[in-house]
Length: 51
Image 1 (tube, rainbow, N blue to C red):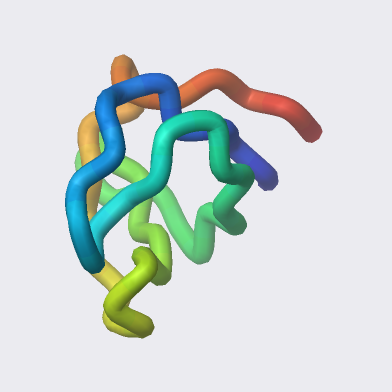
Image 2 (image 1 turned 180 degrees about the horizontal axis):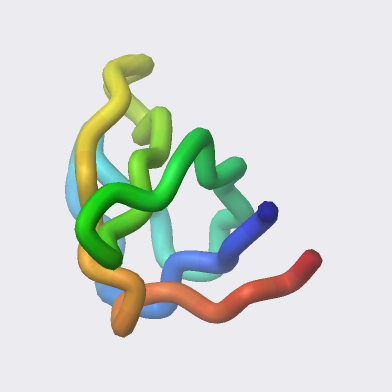
């Protein structure tokens, strides 16, 4: 699944309007490899599903 980040840009974390791949969904949160190159869990309300 691909999602677009709708929050404000955070340095080395997430970029506004950038599309990210969701690696898995764990307890309702998205596991995403962010701009730091590491994968973390993020709440789905900060994203829009694009595919």
